[in-house]
Image (cartoon, rainbow, N blue to C red; front, side, top):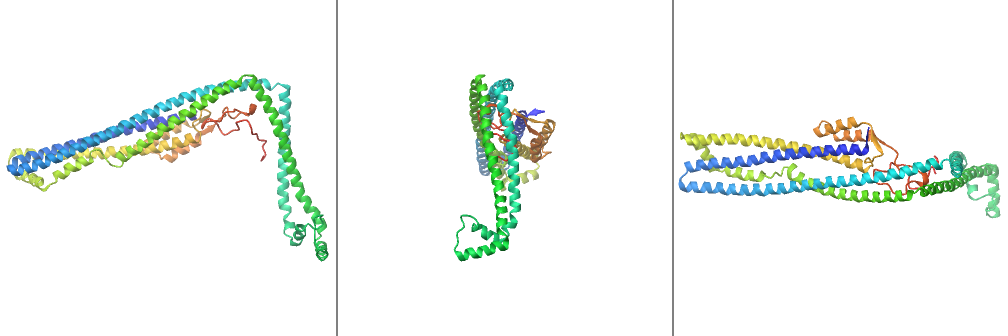
Length: 463
């Protein structure tokens, strides 16, 4: 069993591993594409040699000049693109380092907060043990328990009476003559009508048996209201009793010196909040660079693509093709040697291109899987799983699933299911209501959803 914080740290380790794999495939991709560019330049040089052998002086100057221009353009593109990629990669590395530093700073602040919370909890437990034998506290606690029971019963009775009223009043409400007299307040002091109307209403009342029905209907409405009023009164009494008990507990805590411990915890909490802000800024900067990186690399904008296209266009000019064909027909050994070298270079270019395509595909897959894991990590952290007061009971499955996501054997949805299915919230310092609870707002990941803050309470009913 591991804590929620340990589980998220394990996820972070897999994210770092994914980034390391990305860097590995990025280097392989860059090396392969750079090799393609170098080989294309070599191939151009081979054609240049053929040009020197086969063309007359004028034609030779023209072709070599075209090749030199293409080569210069390609090298300029290679250098500029490679420098842009180098700068982007360096900025990304620096952003990753800032994230690591911010995470370390946050962890230091969290450790300090946990220590101060532990001090507060120690004082609270000691005071709670001592005050539990105090006569005033025992009496106040017994009064709260007594009123809690009464309030719960009163709530149940009021709710049941309201349900019965809603059910039993339907026959009365379905009788239009009865409801006519009821709404006119017939038989009550508030009834107002002229003599003719009074006469007619008396006839209607005798027909529907209004006098008896009216008494029953009034009682049916009155009982739930009285029970609800009694329930509210008991709740008020319970609040006052609970406030008296809380005041006794709080005074005992203050006498034990909890104020200084709570102030230290509040200061440490603020430090964690500030560290959270710095970490969020660092992560956002890294996310922005990740998007730029993905757009530049993963979507196919390779640093060397344009340079290769420039050289390929130069190679594919008709006069160079003709040189190639003539070289094959010429019995001169030097020509044949150059042709064989061009053919060998073509094979090497194809091999390098395959390596580049493979590295590019692997790089894209790893980046996508890393993104899946990061989204789950961020979602869980926002949901409060980054807590020292929660545990994961399926840490073995977590490791296996993370490994599976990283290799592509398991989808990201399974990771979310495993994480949410294995988590259990434990009690935190904010869950105790003793003395009104911890008067410090909890940070995300520290509260567990219990009552805290010192004002509210529950009796088990709906109030």
